[in-house]
Amino acid sequence: ATSSFYASAKEVHDLRNNLSSDEQAQVRFWRDVPGGGHAHWLSIFLQVLDQEGNRAMLDKAALVFAKMGITQSDARISCWNVKYEYNLLRPVTYINAFIAPKKDWNSFITTPNHPEYPSAHSSFSAPAAAVLTQEFGNNYSFTDYTYDFLSLPARKYTSFAHAAAEAGNSRELGGLHYPFSITAWDQLGTRIVNHMNQHIRFKKG
Image (cartoon, rainbow, N blue to C red; front, side, top):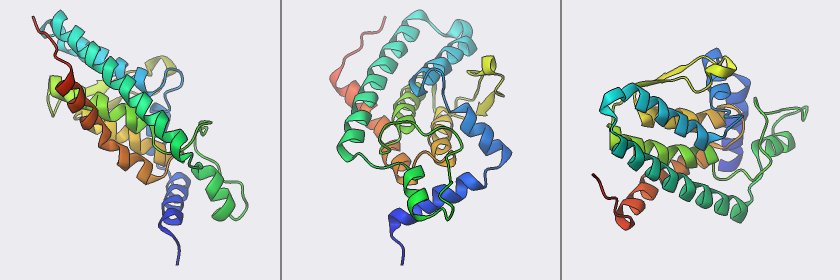
C-alpha cells in the first residue's frame, strides 16, 4: 500500500505529464513572472476599475486599494511563516526520488527556491478574490489581459473565485505543489478578510 503523500505526489506527476493545451496556457498565465501573484491581482483590480468606468467612484477605489494591500500583506506573512515552519520538500524532489524511474522528471515551469507548503498563489489569490467579491459581487465576469505585453492570450472568468481557483490549480498542474497545499489555503482568504473587517473600521464618504 502507498501513503497518501505518495498518492498526492503521483497525482502531480501524472497531471504535469498529461497537460492539455489549455492547461499549459493556464500554467503559463499564472506563472506571474515578472511581478508575482499579488501584482497579478492588483492588475485584475485595475482592469475591473476600467470595466466599471464612471460607476467606479474614487472613494470606493481607494477603499479597495486599502483592503487589497492589507490582506495581501497578511497573506504573505502568514504564508511564509508556515513555509519555513514546515519546510516541506517540493514535488520535483520527491518525484525524482520515489516515482520517476529515470530520475529526470521536472516541473512544467521553474520550481521556486523556497519551501513547498503552502501554495503562495493560493495564499494571495484567496484573500484578493474575497475582497473583490465583497465589493463587486459573486458573479462578476471579466477578461484578464494582465499579460498582453508578453503575448499570452487573455483568459475569461465568471467570477473572482473562478480566477482564484484557476490560479491555485495552475500550480499543481505545473508540478510545483501538492494538491493539499492548495486546498488547505483556499480557506485563508475569507478568514483574513473577515479578520480585517472585524478589527479595522473603514470610513466611507
